[in-house]
Length: 462
Image (cartoon, rainbow, N blue to C red):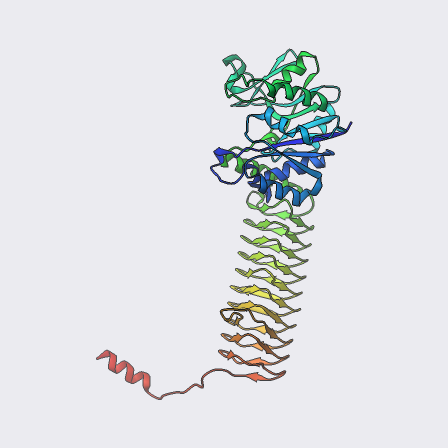
């Protein structure tokens, strides 16, 4: 039996206190709606319809970019409840899918294997609801049973004190016979919404199916998976659970984390075995870390590739950077977009690299800015060196040849090149090319005035 999925994602989420659509808030580097869509597709759904409303263009653009034509959209405007939301999706449902899975776009941690188990258990029923038993059922809809037989779901706002005492709740996940769903939603939304909130409840269909003896309930054991997000606090709770699951999976794969509670790894990060992560590390976006690499305390690495056996000392920040085998980076180094650090290079404390290549064994160990440059193999960039790459209108490139030595506190004014094995004297401002094996001295000549300091002190002490 083929199954398609409908995701309810039209609401603004007023309790988030945000202009952004609630489902676009991120959990471990992905918007919540992406987690839900991916779980449904990974669980084997053939077709995916997302019900959008608030900021629908943003939601549609993101999901289309991620999943292409595997996802379709339906618009709910105005928003008149969950039953009305799914009714808006009916025109986009496929006739060939005999069952329709209904999910909430603000429940990011529901796992594909859980969805598969729920769908399998729902075979033979017209409508099945995923439930959970909570110590505090709060404002969730309550599951009403007659013995083991499911009879109805009563929303909290419409529930009596006796019903509110029930601890089994509706998680907001359903599997329905597609023909039943389409027929009964049309009936539901044709009449008045006769309830406390004046909305069309999807849960009203449970009583219809139950009256025919075809409604079932499937109890979710791991209730953390059903954590919905309506507030910033709940977003943090859902994120914490997701990050714990990510970290546990990487440790099982051979990654060492000295303090997993304070190690933050996004969903799309890739790590090799024997990576060592110190406390406070953040790995963001499409970052990859190679085997045997150590990442020190407080490092933030975003959308970057780090190869094998790299040592990254504490408090470095990488953005769209590339670091090759055996390099040593930091501490407190900033690799900006386009930084390309070759094998065995050293890039040290308070060095900033942007859009520049360092060839094998090159070194820039202290307090330097390297922008729009190419540094040859084994070249040394002295402390305080600046690549002056911007003239106020355009960026220009600097080339330092293999084996060259640039003395401390020098400024290389681009466009300029320093030849292979050349030297630049400390404190120079280099505005012209330096030939291979040459020496550039571009500074004022020192002049000593005998006795000057003694006279200066005598004048000022009087």
